Length: 122
Length: 447
Image (cartoon, rainbow over all chains, first blue to last red; front, side, top):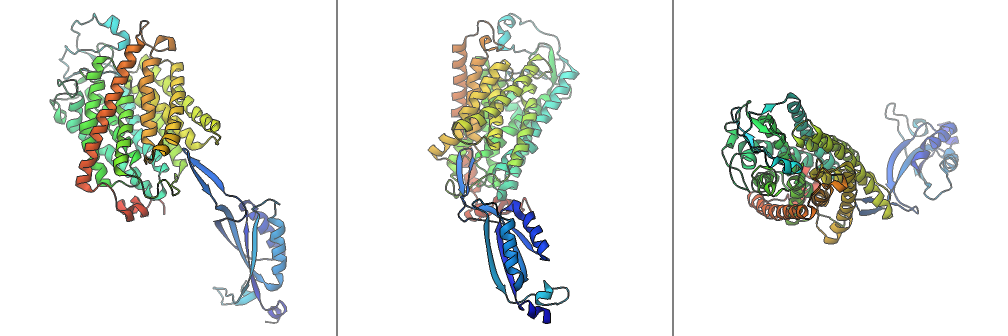
């Protein structure tokens, strides 16, 4: 409990939407920071980046949705800023469509196998 | 099957008439003397057996994958199952009353006699004439070869009506359509006493009988059936062009049985059909991508596959009736015409020919059938005689095409409305939205 208090006793959820081919670089950057786990989902969405046009035998469809990867990382609150920095640095190509990062507070965490809670469960 | 065949039932029938190729008509005209019993060559027989199963491969899995990949994932099994089921139904109908209607003895220009109902009188010793005097193949092989043509033609029609037509309706339609449309037209064009055969119409492997017939019927069926829910505003795109690509390859390979097999012998005519089936198709596949580029688009995989099929369709009537360079031109022209048929004509007219059965088989078939009357000429490297009368030939080709269009159009109206009366024709809106795989067959293609 002592250690958790030092870390602020809180956790943050960092959600990053990134370009799919940047996943390996982001994972490496986060592992170096000491992040011990993450959840990755293939998603589609749109922001400022334009979608593509598909044509099938002359029938045109413009798709607004661009495929992206969503990474979810729960980390001790004190680590959150560095996680954000690391994702921002490693997922950056400088081109439109690099993605976004969101940071949310996490109220509780439980490791299912042992019942450990909060930061020790991460 | 170029032109067809008098079937000599039984070995003893030494009086079999042999139909001469138009190319040889001049020399052959004098030869009318009775011929001895035809001999069955093992090489010809083996080739025709292989050709027959190659055409089966065009249907399953070729056409099933080609069409299936073009539909949405929720209708994959429905599309494949409809194709397989109507093909099987066609095989059974063929041996019951189809063969005798198309190629039985006697009859008139429009239909054969009914003496071979349920293959009455056909034995392992029965033979069917080829295009060479005195050479025959076992009649059972000829029956099987022609059976696969009936099966694939009715399956092709389904390309325009998938994703919304009931399975039961498809089966009722198939039985009636084969009986009143396919069998008479096959007879008219290919049987020895057929109306267009006697006029000298050139249709080596089925440009009119198979492709124009299927294409026009597909258009009429789609018009009666109506559009799919959401067409053309919603996003309706092929679910797996990978499958379509595999189907394209299987169709092309199988088409060698279809075209080169139509020589009915393993000979030079089959060889000509073979090389044309290579080069016309190659030309058409590339030309479709080229025309896409000219229209400011990217050369596409679906365009490539569509071009391949358009080329195969167009070379079908010309396979043994053109030289390789005539075939290349024919493939290119068919590809360009079909491109505009599916990407400009269809949206402009607003009909929902789901998988472009009319655009590609109807369009390519007409280009092929008319074009055959041109590339047959020796100036284009074709096998026609030196004094080939192109004007007359084109007239015959036009007449055959026009008759096929009218006949298949009217026949399809009848067949579709009977299917509607018996089955209701179209699935419910709920089934259509959820997909015919689940609604009609109780399965999903992908789990």
